[in-house]
Image 1 (tube, helix red, strand yellow):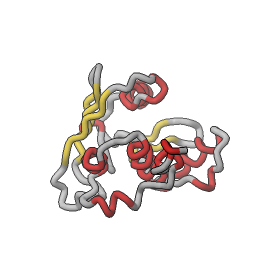
Image 2: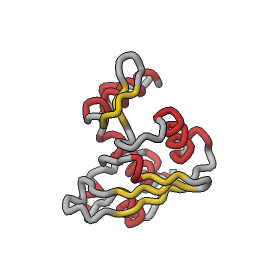
Image 3: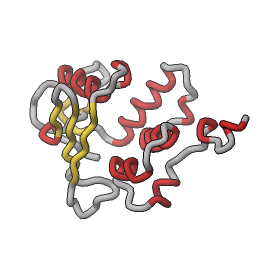
Image 4: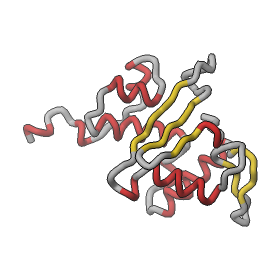
Length: 153
């Protein structure tokens, strides 16, 4: 998803993304995603993006830009391998096995967490842009919390 600053509107209670084109929208019809502010400060995407915008500044261009080895922001769009590197590095710093993470882990992790929380499959598809339940199902990872007989144990 190649978002630009112009595609984002951060308000006090939500974040609105105008997605011009995505993996599941090759025709470029576009869609809007509204993400509410979360109660848990450390997990709030609205607060996280607002903090990033403070760091990034308000210049037009890619929402997520490159960062040089000297931690200087470069006004060019992050490349896929840079996203993966950031994720793997962060996982390692958090004490996780970094070899088990990649950029696609973000999408699968979101879908799995939403499914674990009992989100409606069509609500998940609305956010991810999946066109079929079968395709969405490929992103749901095994989870003990979804074990169907959990209540009986």
